[in-house]
Image (cartoon, rainbow, N blue to C red; front, side):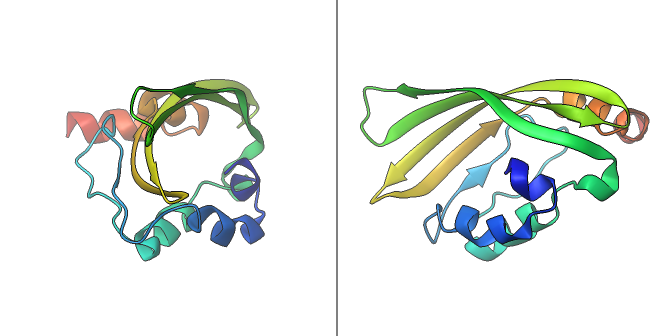
Length: 134
């Protein structure tokens, strides 16, 4: 994902190939209701619309990556931070993804991120606040 955000679109298809068809990807902390991503085409649209360098991102990386095993052999928890610099400001956004993997593909993912942290990082805090107030 970090290379995709930094404009390397060659990473799009390998990223999408990690997911089963169908899949079920949700963003429970999204500030507005969102539809689950169920197909690879949904994922392609989602990841293809990722924020890029053109949006003011100078650096973007996933760091402090930890994978936690669970009692269910299909379920893993990924914990990490997206860190970088955008609009001349550093950011650090904590993330936790809960994944269900079967036959080597992600069949389900719950992506817990900080939407306020991302809005602040990408210079969209006023836009988010106005939308929430509206």
